[in-house]
Image 1: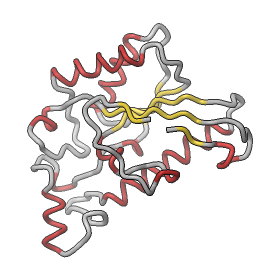
Image 2: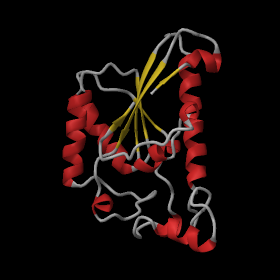
Image 3: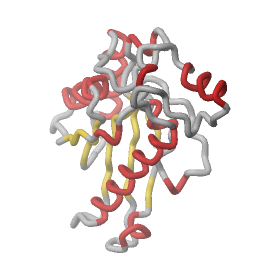
Length: 196
C-alpha cells in the first residue's frame, strides 16, 4: 500500500510512504480454527517454516523500519525476518497492531462472536464480545490510528521516502486499516502473506 504523506502533512508533497503488511505465521489456534485474540500463542512448526520463507522473500528489501504487534506470534515472525538480514531492522512493538480482542470468546471456535451478534440482532461490525472483547469497528479505529501515526511520523522525518514493514494479524488486515482504501474489502490474509 502506498500512501501520499504529502497530502497528510505537507512536508514532502512528492513523497510516498510505502507499507508492506505481513500476517504472522500459522499458530496451533489457526490449525484448530480457534479465536486466539490477545493470547500469548506461538507459531506452530509450520508457522516457523512459513516465517522463514517470508524472511527469505524479504531479506534484500530495503525497509526503513519494521513495526510489530506486541503479541508473541508476530514477534516470532519478526525474529525470523531479522535472522536472515545482513543488517537487522530496528523494530517497534505497537499494541495498535494487535489481533481483534475476542474477550470471553478467546479459545472458542472462530465465528462464535458473529453468531452471538446475530442472535442479539446486532451487526457483527459493532458487536463487542463479553469479557472485554473488541468490535470490528474498534479494531478498524485502532488500525487507522496506527496508519495515521505511520504516515505522520514518516512525513516529519528528514528523508522524503519511507519503506515500512508491518507484521500483524489477519483480523487487523481484515479490519482494513487504511482510510484511503476504506471502501475496499481486504482479501483474506493467509499465514505469512504480504499485503501491499
